[in-house]
Image (tube, rainbow, N blue to C red; front, top):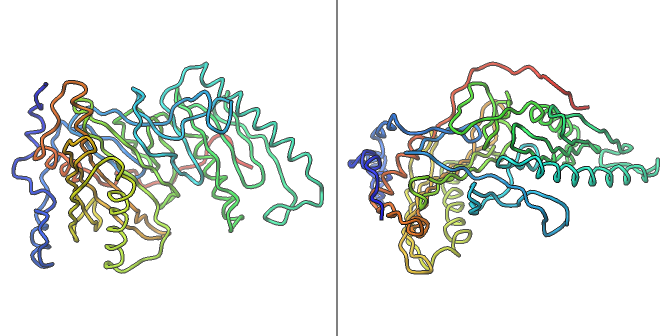
Length: 395
């Protein structure tokens, strides 16, 4: 098997993994965790997710949605419900959220996109037919007569319409495809309509973003895409999965979510963060292993926020031993600044490396590498200026 490249050895043999993970008294734990983390190696690659940025010890593949000819609900062309790497291997996860459900795809062929456009236009005709059937006395959720608009997209071959407060958009940015369905029909419909209109305008100006490109303007990073947004706390939930090219046993996940809960005590936040971590290790990920030893650190720092860290020693269903590292941050709602919910994890699945004749990353190197990746996560620095609206305006 191929030997582990020396670049992982340079991460730092003296790195203390998660402040030694001991269940120390609080004072001792705070002291153990007070040391500055080692610098991120200068030859690492950096990408961005939402408002955050993250670095890697080498080239990565990124997961996104892909074209699917049929879905379980329709015989029309559609997009995958899960995200995949470019080689077709499923990465888990699901749709993104930006004032509604958002899907972003790997680059598509013209034929694939034409099939998607044809399917979306069929849906558009059905919506318009339903709208025309409505009686003048029928009122929508806002107590008004329903309204329908056919919208223009910046991409000439896009499809978009609005029905009351709900937007439906399909368009290409470079060779990747955006599919967006807004969440306009919410309890506060006036605020939802305004937010959805702004989101449509921002999406209509979305720019292609190559991997490792870090935009300087305010906005949100997604695979292949950058959405300009000058709001201090944009409405989003972006969870992106990466895989190291040299080490296919290693996947990295970073999720950036706008928090919508009020400020809680540090103690309550800590327990809520532990619950979220336990939900992943104990429920969502349980089918992947036969047993696991999960350890928690009560106090830690991640991306400049207080976090709960956990690491897992797993035994897979086939008997293989694997490892995982996770950080969980519970934010709170704040109109003036962004205090997000963050989830970060690095997981080794040895069989993915063995299948390609590559030696899996050893335990010590794994935790050192995972911790250094965690130390690299921070808020992406941007120019502090408002963005003037451009292009097609939503009605």
